[in-house]
Length: 615
Image (cartoon, rainbow, N blue to C red; front, side, top):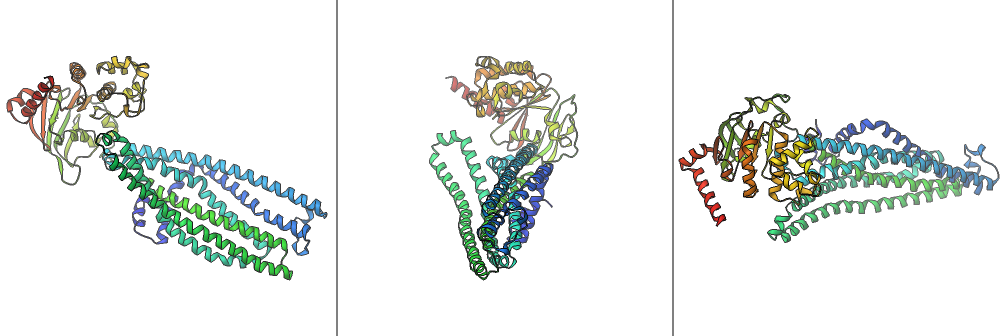
């Protein structure tokens, strides 16, 4: 049973048992990441136990000082009596010295514990982020189409940060607080069992308040995590499309939308704050109630001579120390609930299974890189078909062009060919083999692709052309840039191929970005080349340069060119005209013009547009 399946059930339940089981499952999965560092975690726990034990000894030293030296009382005998002098001043100095030694040891143990646990937590977070990123690389493109990028960023950043807090100051701190309570109660029982029983009469009230707080805190923290992801997603979309927002004067509406989402975030946090605002004052009031009970009963017994004053003062110190861990436990419960919400979302992502091929086969050499579609049907949603019974064949070394109106299904052909999406019916063959028989990685090693909207990474121009691939030498990168008619521009830059690019290639024109992507495809020298509107943003002069070199670059490669400009595909061996998801026409440039159909009308419209631009 996975965390995801349990999560779907618990989301519909409020039963404490179901929540506890769910949390236990999540913690068990989180333990898998902590397990490699279990020795460091165990050392941290031992240091915390030492710190708790030392901390519990301070009130005992107070009792010792009062009952032996300030107000001597034979009933206040201690096992340390044989080690202490009888002189009051010398004895108090000895007790103070012991106190400072204990204080130094406790501080040293605490410092070492914090360092050890943070050392461990940072490595656990590194491992989780690494697994999230690697898992995202294996998911199909359709997952990213349906999932806001801001939500994915939140998984690898804020959600993981919450888990870091859980490991470094959550679970271990909870163990420390529990140890503190155990040590304090053990010392109180040692001093006076009956006063201890009187004091813990307040415990049922503390338990009741904690249960009520726990119920409200879990729901509020889940709402907070949802609100954070929604806010991050909205900001990502706005920053990505800031140009469109400004050019359409959409700023006011964007601000209103942001205010609405931001207010949802505020309200979610306010629910959590409101629970705190009630819980902590109530706990403080119960603390004072417990101290009042100690003073009433303990003071009476001191007067009666059945309890020493030192023991009562120690009890008052323990009373203050006991409620502090209870408050800390409530705070750590907040951390736990926030972490559980983050873990739930992280594991929901990691439980998203990538597609599995029919047979897992490694890459193999394709001597005849043909491409064939056989009666392919595909729909992005239900049976709203984008491609209907599409069939075509591209022989090795030939060029196929695909044209058609917007929405005709042209780019979907590329998405299916690269297995970004899986077909509903039919077969797609590369080199005579069904693409589902290969892993996506093995299949994609056969393709060089230039998309209409190229992705440029942070780094230099050379990094963007070669994608930091050590197998592509600088000379090959320069040759690819030259064939893409980009070398002259690059060499004019101050740092040449080492010129850094800003985010998303800012500083380059849209056409230059596409040329970088074109050079990238050439540098990888794959046997099959796919151009998806690759020249749509290139000026006519540059387009002419590319067209002049395409005959050389496409030599020996099977190529599929999706084009808006018909002038770039005249030399294609075959041209397919897509219309409403079907192949409406096919043939060479001259054959399609002679049909006087869709292609002919597209050609006439583009010719008129070019004449108008020239005029």
